[in-house]
Image (cartoon, rainbow, N blue to C red; front, side):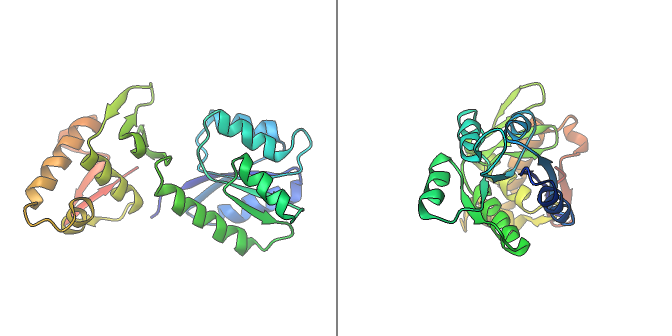
Amino acid sequence: MTNTHRLLVCDDDDALRETLTEELDLYEEFAASGAANAQAAIDLVAQDRTDLLVMDVGLPDMDGREAVRVMRREGFRGPIIMLTAQDSEADTVEGLEAGANDYVTKPFKFAVLLARIRAQLRQHQASEDAIFRIGPYTFRPGAKLLVGERGSKLKLTEKETAILRYLYRAGREVVGRDTLLAEVWGYNAHVTTHTLETHIYRLRQKIEPNPAAAAILITEAGGYKLLP
């Protein structure tokens, strides 16, 4: 089972917005919600985790590109895909300069938007701006940091960060010890499974309420998995 990406669709066309959120919700990898105007989208992004935003340009209360500028100034780093009825080069450039990551021109096929969404999420997860949810923590791999629900901060080492990032990307699938060693340390003859087990032990001391009975970083036959 993959981790769920939380998507927000902002469009004042009720039929289009509802159709998009319903179609995206059919995919287990997504949880989609909607906003009918720019201010609602700005507020939602500030209040709750949003992994990707689909943003219309022509909104009743504010130009969508200006709303994107506001969100970027306020710290939103997730991917933004703009929807527009205009297909001029100048229009596209303006949206990208405002902080959008991609542009889709109306009318469009849902399959095209879906492919763009998945591509942007893949790129973002590999970036330093990526933010993930692991148990009660917000995981910021770019900062090597886990932030608790009350704002407490746990500093991670480079290897601990790499282990969590790889396990997160695997969803709830078990990752073998040899695979994790190769991905985190490379093919280094001097690194053994004991090294990995030591790092897993230290990670559990940091993130588990009861390290002796792990509930987040689980040992399975042959490897480990996250229950985020």
